[in-house]
Amino acid sequence: MPDPKTLYSVVALVVVGLVAWVGFVLASVKQQWARETPTELAEGTSAPSDVKVLEEGQAEEKSEEKAKAEEKVEAKAEEKVDAKAEEKVDAKAEEKVDAKAEEKVDAKAEEKAKAEEKVDAKAEEKTADGVEPKKDEPTA
Image 1: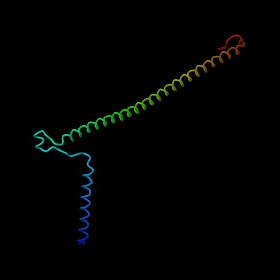
Image 2 (image 1 turned 90 degrees about the vertical axis):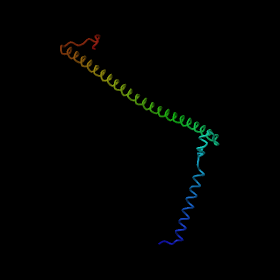
Image 3 (image 1 turned 120 degrees about the vertical axis):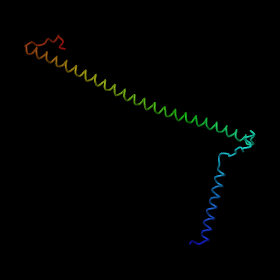
């Protein structure tokens, strides 16, 4: 069995710690706990009514501040979402423009290749017939 003096000192230390903790908690209370007694509720009179009015006013101010802060957060979130959506739309638009440009370039290249083939074919036909094409005539 442990020494009684050690147990007494440990118990005393625990009690002092609890008292200090309770004192700290009571000293750091932010809300006033003034409540009406049942008789004051029945009579409709209350001594700390000024305190309640003050607390209600502070509560309203805090709720308004909280609402404003929430609105700001929502606005920022909407701006971010809008910005991301615009970036996506811009990226898709650029992709579409690039694809259309590539299609046009490919189509023009095909047309040019066909035209060159026709010119080459006509030139071969004329040289095969032994007729030189006139320099005044357009070949294409």
